[in-house]
Length: 88
Image 1 (cartoon, rainbow, N blue to C red):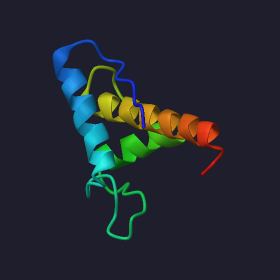
Image 2 (image 1 turned 90 degrees about the horizontal axis):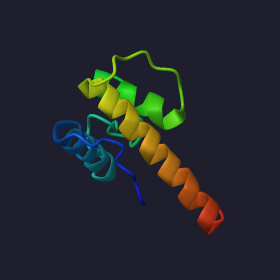
Image 3 (image 1 turned 90 degrees about the vertical axis):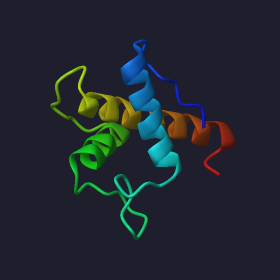
Image 4 (image 1 turned 180 degrees about the vertical axis):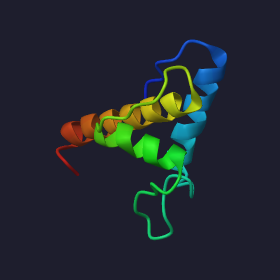
């Protein structure tokens, strides 16, 4: 999965990469024990809103904004990957 990091500044770039890594590792802040979306915390709820393309009112340049943008990027990368592989 090719996820493009939109941030140029060091701190948000690293935070973005951390959140994407949490997705790849199926971290508990993003995934419930049953493997479904974990929206029971701010990070998870915001990430999944970005992933699903849902409206989310968070301030720019905050950790939650980074989580939202990471969700958008992961969702976009997965959709593009499915298109290339034919949904497999």
